[in-house]
Image 1 (cartoon, rainbow, N blue to C red):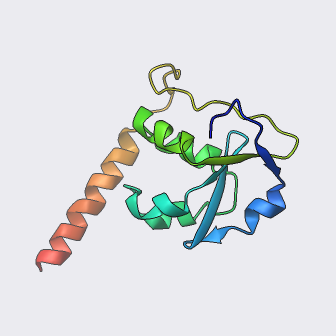
Image 2: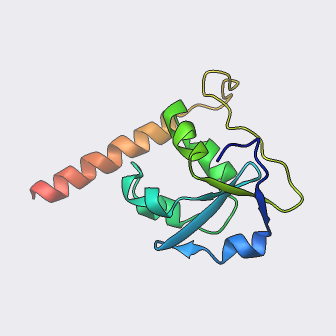
Length: 123
């Protein structure tokens, strides 16, 4: 379904009813996406998606810094729009402004967590 078509409008309350692994919708930039079939393929695991199930996931999606491929996949999962809202197209990572913050602290924490996990797994 493309963004130019007449899309069904859903209230945020309707979206919030779809909050399980078996039936998982999210809102992103005013669009409603059914990601139920994609959850098993999500590279970050299903837990991170479940955290935003039935909610507006725009901030969480942008904070992670998803690739252009992820944005293309998202387009294919579009089922509607938020009632009274407009859908904003996913912005390509190539056109996004550079972040003023540094991701180095998060990267360092991630590396430390992986190292700790490996250490405890080996022991």
